[in-house]
Image (cartoon, rainbow, N blue to C red; front, side, top):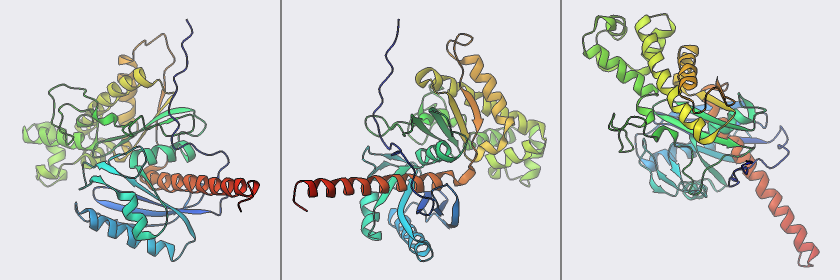
Length: 356
């Protein structure tokens, strides 16, 4: 029996023809440790980039850093629009950060605050949505209709790009894939639940596994402990990944285990969303095939209907850590073009009505 194609709410749709390459937008990616700002052209190329340390969890101090970066870059470039990519859950209108796990934003009207400080329109997006949009526009997702982009870092960020738009759900919360419960009663997550996927398939999870191995005084952790001069607390996902890339067998095994968890969660997403492509980005993705090959195997093993369906492809992201600011800038350019278009249509209608 033919099943009707699901209808998705159109949000953040790319409005046809892209703006001319000379139009510059400014993208800002706010992370737990760094605030990165970049001037981006319509081809997705960064013309100039600046970075600042994230000033703790102080919301006002973060806004001050953003204002400094925008003003400095605006002095050297003709900036037409500003886009902010921030970790957290946004309302559907893209104006309020309802909750951020790593910053002190709780129902924070961030767009209004920044527009008042900068005296210009600001586009606000979830950082993973921004990165996913960038990969669809300029990176590994070019030419694909429906994809899921995953950003593996401190946690797992997610974006769902469907037929040229970022799908954000009915309330703006779509894409929080890292908080699917994959191990009931498992590790405690910052979101308050236990057993979230990001507690097993993120950079933080990899670092935790390395530290646990070292605390168990396993001889298999000798290389790890040597790399951090015996300081177990200094074992991070980055340290484990670097040793794995250098050929250290235990660390490669730890990365592979995280890859298996990654593949299991991807199989769940495929069952629910059926995209044609999964893009894996974020800091942990530098592990490359050490991570992706175990993920593909676990995905194929756990996929619903395996052997009787088309399988999505799992690939590495192409834009690296700059994806968030590139996507934020491009989303702001899209919104700016839409506003200008709507304003032009409004003026034309007024002239026709004899009121302009």
